[in-house]
Amino acid sequence: MSTYPALLVNCMDPRLQGTNAEAIAWAAGFQPGSWEQLSYAGPSLWLEDPHESSHADTFQWLLDEVSEKVHQVHTVVLAGHSGCGGFKLKHGLMGPAQEKATIIASLRAAAAELKRQKPGLKVILIFATIHEYQPAGALPAITCERID
Ligand SMILES: [Zn+2]
Image (tube, rainbow, N blue to C red; front, side, top):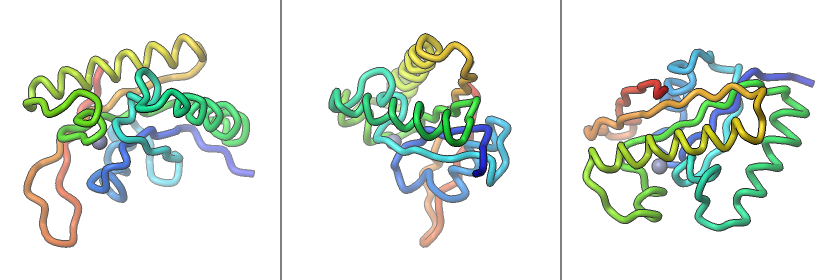
C-alpha cells in the first residue's frame, strides 16, 4: 500500500488538469507522483459553502477514510482559479478583481474550516490565473501564486 504526502483539491475545470494540475502542486512544493487529486466545481466551496449540502459529507468521507487513513496525507493543497464556473454558479458573473477577492476569501474560509476539523493537517492555498490564449489541442498557460 502506497502513501502520499498531499491531496490536491482542484477545480474540475478541464483547463486545470494534466500539466496544469502538476504546476499547481509544484507551486505548493509537491512533485508529480507525490499527490492525489479530488475535483469540485469551485474547490474551496466544497469545504465552506458546497453547491448541495450532501457534498460536504462526500468530501469528509474521502478525506477521512482514503486520504488520511489509507494514503496518510498530511497536507491539503487547495486551489482556486480565475474564470471559475463553480463560483459563477454560486455568485453570478463577476469582474476579474471581484472574482479573485471572492475566491481568495473562500480559500481562507475553507482553510480555517479544515484547520478547525483537523488541527494537525497542513493547508496550502494556491490561486491560479489562467491566461486567456489557449493554443489548439493544448492547455492554456497558468500562473500560480501562494495565498497566505
Ligand atoms: Zn473552476
